[in-house]
Image (cartoon, rainbow, N blue to C red; front, side):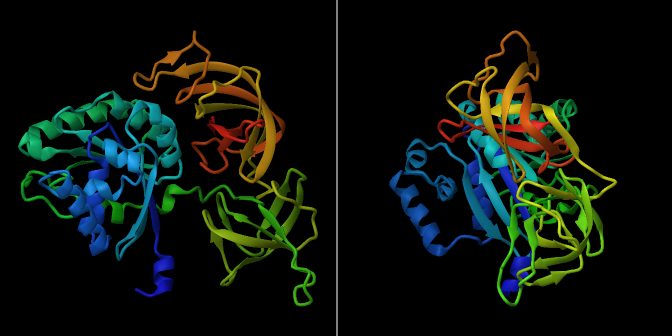
Length: 421
């Protein structure tokens, strides 16, 4: 495969979630191993390690449990990212922990995913953790969810068990906003329906997990309707060759831009036309989300980092008072009426927490209205007021312009991740 075709390949980001010991790390190890994405020496190292522990099978989970503490305890603690490619697509996997106290890690790992794999142990069916992970996937607006009913080898590959769990999951998911759901019966340990079709489950006529990952349509996961270009950096080379060049670099957060398009710059409201769309490889006739490009405009307008280039007849919301679903990520509890720095697209501002409306019990989806203290790993609906207007869309409409993070100004730690509703 030449380098250019590799760079042009479509990238699918997916995260894995599930209870402890549901086999997430084994599944990823199986995907890497069966798709021939690991080196012989990596395989030999885990084979050796498995033998030392007296395990009869090669423990493929060791491929992803990267921290020493994880390997010793046999659990996943932090988000482990793995990269691999097949002839059809490139993949980035975020392997997220199952324990309740790592909800924040799951939010981090899944926030940029196109697809979420949720593992369910065929022996236990839908458990509290399954509800939590499905809810978080729905909250984060992940477009595709694949439920892998794992350990089918331990229930004699029973179709009845699979159908019962599938019915339960469908009933629960119908209460949430999950657009595209798939169910695959697998055995990560034995390799059934992961990359290769299972001979033990001839009653299952659907796709293998790998086939789904390679072929699921992700082109429309991005918003190609609302044009949004947050400016990250103004490029002024000041060289003789590009003496008058002034470009605005950033990542397209929505829509399609073409030279000649009439655009408006916010917050100033000044209008112009796109003169060119430049990249390292040359100029483009069109660019769309999530490409990183440099736009030049026909008029000299004062534009700086944090401004947004949009279409005149399709503007984002411009508000200082916003309602968000907030995932709290820090050991220190959220301070009511507290002041925090925020980052939203390429914009920096500050905010004050006006009101906690309610917290969400992640396991039952019920609202908790009498307890307004928000601690680590908790999710709440909160009203904030910002020091300057934010240029945003609802998170359900655009995941880039609809999300922001809160930062503790004293320690510079990211303390919260929020979705604007």
